[in-house]
Length: 267
Image (cartoon, rainbow, N blue to C red; front, side, top):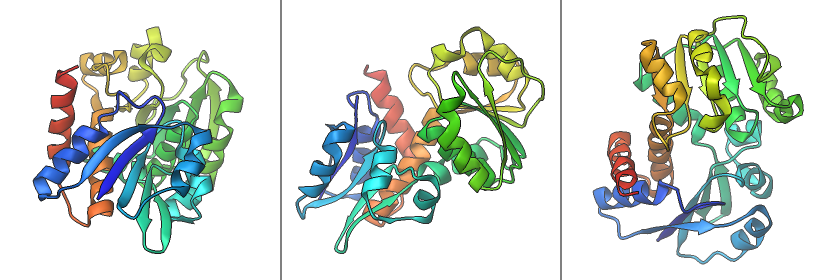
């Protein structure tokens, strides 16, 4: 069987290393490749699949487009309009989202078991997934911090749909409240000199970036002795869930994290 990760750019993806490690652990003679694909190419690609294909991981910029194209969807995809997984089944294609349960598992693994308030940097598909994730952990309110308020419209809609009180702020506004969790879905350079201020206003930090690591936020969190969850933690947990969906078998997120770290060490 063949599987792959779809997105653009895709050469940097650690998904092939993780999924191949899973297949080796499970004794499966499956393949997993990285496929460069933009939004315009997604529909024709999905329409031309052979019967030896089992599923795909989906990354930027295809997560919303995938949710729109694939009619059968999990409840989470239906709520978010964001998919990171496509399964090829006898009845057709089905989309799912392992980012949400993967984020929750990554937080719990690092000792963050309940969140009542969160500040999310960014307003894209990942921000929407993270807002929904914290809503399942008891969150009551979330702040979305973006460069332009218009960039937060879809994420804010998802958060409100999950029952969260939502406020939108621009990146240059002062931070007033100390919240349970800071989640960054933006590149490290977008945070810049505000890393320490952001960390000081949070009880835990979740930075979805994993390369390069540590980010400025991660370094600030370590200096302040604030709990930190990394993008690699998220990547490993969501990938383990994808492997289970595609193969029907479970593998340890720790196995996948080790495979990702080994791949990073070669770059």
